Length: 99
Figure 1: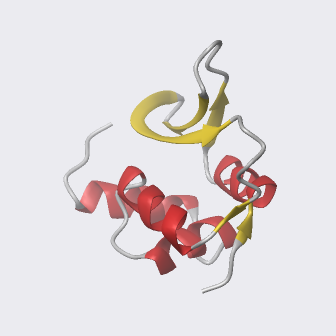
Figure 2: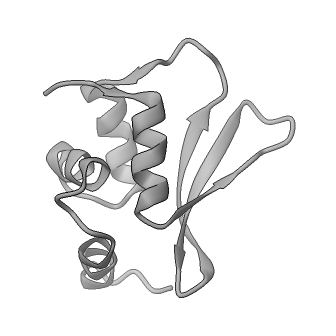
């Protein structure tokens, strides 16, 4: 599996309905999923540190749990567009996640 540049990772999630939330003094900021104009409990922490420039398979595997997805490929598909916002929300609803 290839890596995803951090800026592409953030933009990919923002394009899929995630809203950027600055965290003030915390070491991480968040991207939180918005459904029907409301914030959900689905969020992904984004490190403010400059050490992380790319998301490789290890980080994608960690993010997979936060996004409530089953495989690393689903995460990549969400970021790179084969998995649409509607398909993602339907996947979450199919897993019994309520908004």
